[in-house]
Length: 83
Image (cartoon, rainbow, N blue to C red):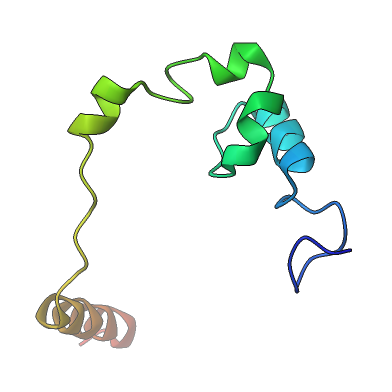
């Protein structure tokens, strides 16, 4: 059985596979079911999985406004066309 409709069985969405990849790459994943399966050196590394105190200070990047995106698009067009 596939872990999701677009990936074959054993894909990265499966907890075991997600844990293998995260442990090998030393990179976090959002699959909570895989966390107990992680290499303890990765799971307990605060640079990979920051603690609650650090997470409480994190903020999400806001979405760019349509006005800003329009300015970026116009600047990129001017750059590409040389005008």
